[in-house]
Structures are given as C-alpha cells and as structure tokens.
Amino acid sequence: MSDYLKKLIVKPGSKIRLKHFDPGYHGKHESRKAALPEIEENRQKMQELQYLMYAENKHSLLIVLQGLDAGGKDGVVRHVLTGMNPSGCVSVNFKEPTPEDLAHDFLWRVHPHVPGKGSVTIFNRSHYEDVLVARVHGLVPEKVWSKRYVQINDFEQLVSTENNTTILKFFLHISKDEQLARFKKRLDDPTRQWKISESDYKERGYWGDYTEAFEDVLTKTSTERAPWFIIPANHKWFRNLSISQIITRTMEEMNMQMPKPTVNLTEIRRQYHQATDQEKVGGKKH
Image (cartoon, rainbow, N blue to C red; front, top):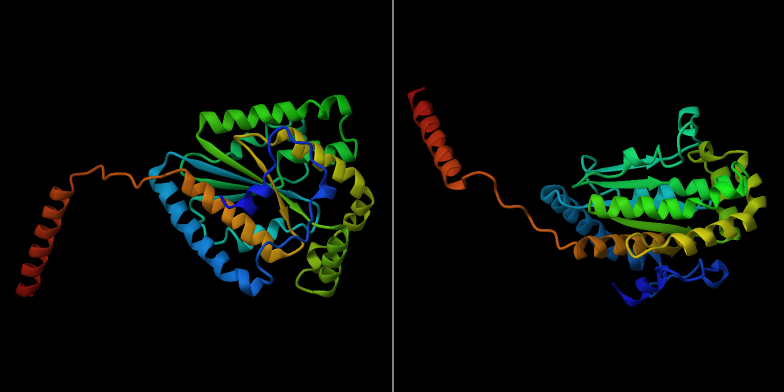
C-alpha cells in the first residue's frame, strides 16, 4: 500500500480529531481527468480479483461505507464498485429499524448480510448507525450505546476469523460547506430532487454532535482486522481513486489462487473430441 494510502488508515488505539484531516486533500493528481486512467485500471483489477475470489471460494470481503448526508456513499457504489459482477457482489442499505429489528439486539439484522465465502458485500450505512444516529438523537440511553463499541469489535472479530472475511471500513469525510453545495445541486437537478428530504437541513444542526460521534467510532473501532480509512471526499474523483486503490491492494494481498480442476481434463478432452467427430460424421450423412 502506498505511503499516501497509509496516511488514510486509522491506526488502532489512535485518538482521532477530524479537524486534523483535510476533506479537500487530493494527493498527487490535480483533476478528475488526471486520475481517471488510474481509477479505470483499478476497476478492471477489482473485476478480475472478484472473479478470482468467487472461483477460489476461500475469502470474502465486507466493505462498510459511512459518512454524513451527501458524503458520497451511493456514488462509491455506482462509480467504484460498478464493475463487480452482481452474482458475487451485493449492496445492502440499512434503513430505520423495523419493529422486528427493535425486538432483537442491534446486530441481529446485520449478521444475515455478512458475505459468504467467495462473495463481496457492501454496507451502504451499517451497524454503525447504532452508535451514530442512535447516539446523536438519543434513541437509546448512553449506558446502552456506550457498550456497543466493544460489541461491534467482537462481532467484526467473529466475522473475520470464523469466515475468513476481510473488512474494510471507509468514512467519507466532507466539509460542511461542501455538503451544503451538494444539497444545492440536488435542488437544481430534477433528476436528483427525489433524494431531497426535510431532514437534510435539520441534520446539519447536529453537525458538531455527529462529528464527535464519528470521532469516537473511528477511535474505538478501528482494529487490525477491521480498519477504518478516513477518505477525503470533497473531490469525488479522489474519493473514488482512494477507495478503488485500497480495495484493489487489499484483494491482491489475499494472494488468491485459481482453483485446480476437479475433473479429469484428459478424459473431458477425449469426450469432447469424440463428440466433435461424431457430429462431423452425422453432418456429412445429411
């Protein structure tokens, strides 16, 4: 992993203050045009690596996307992960808990969506909502949500060790001004006005509370097996470049191998040639 990507990872045990991270950072590239060839190369690699993962059937990958409204979670799914084959990659969006969800522990609704061997799953929002929204809006008391960091770490440890699942967690870091500018674009674009909700602007009043909640999440739940990456996301192209690079490098490090055939290829080839010869003879008779 390159030095600049290493700067984005949250080292376990480090104390995070988001004011120290520039959401407008864009690395060595100055524009989307300059970065696009690298993004496309990463997409192609991801497609090949996903096929290898599916064939080998030993590893799985869980990608967690979190961030404030307009941070670009949908954009990552659409522009970065679009090359993955839907037969082996699914995106799950965790919305407001149902009454049945609330009748169980907060991780109950999450576990069925963890990827099986050979698969990739994207959490567009995730179990972290239960230490973000639940905390900021007081949906549960502090004595409840404060225990969830340990429970989340235990859950992710279980998933990663028992099912050989690699977990990558991305916090899409945008500025308050950038969020407002993106809301304005939604208002002006008829094709995106459906995404507007009354809560968009109301939630901006909780910006400081969400910042503190995210800082605690990043500080308390970035582990060796399930690290957080703080992705500067004011520039959408840099967001896409960084995430595509991290996913590609991570999948390459799995050292996956194409499985050996489970059938006798010599016998299969013999049957193939026999069938081909018979069809040729049959064709001549007609």
